[in-house]
Image (tube, rainbow, N blue to C red):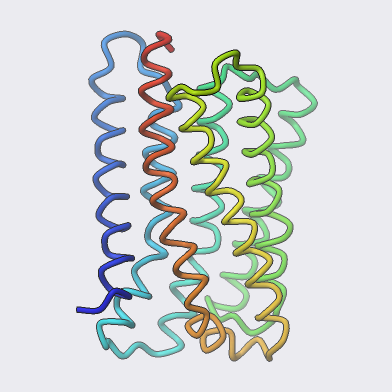
Length: 237
């Protein structure tokens, strides 16, 4: 078994275990169950399934482009939902309340994303035949969410008197994941646009750095959520 199987498989296992850990922590919370724990549990659960194709490929499994088309067509909206849940969790954990206008704009943006992904999935039957889905999905929907996560956490860390605590470490890991995610978003757009959209599968599977960064992101989220959860529990959140 090669490192290309062990490394993503390890991240997958860590993601599963951490999702379960957070869900159990939410369920067994002694006081009012904090919503952010459930958001992060669900977000992490949805996020790590991107590891599945690289594990299967490196195990020597033969998969058709049609199957991968369907998988990634589903993965796009699922990953967006995962990022949205992570952001909602950050807002709840930090007690950040959006004003009415921002809530309306954010909801409209979420509905636009849902309509966009549903349109491409229904009209194209899960087949990625244009550059629109990967480009718009990465730049218009993934990228802004990651920037919002970074801004929210960075502002809170800057306000901390003691920046050497679990909360700051957890925030740093989640910010790190968002930075890696932004790099992946730009990387995908750069390489996918360089080839016909029908060759996206070949382009993506040849980018080992993409899957390395994806695996690192899962590990960053695992440590980030655990540290933030423990920090919030200490403060009684």
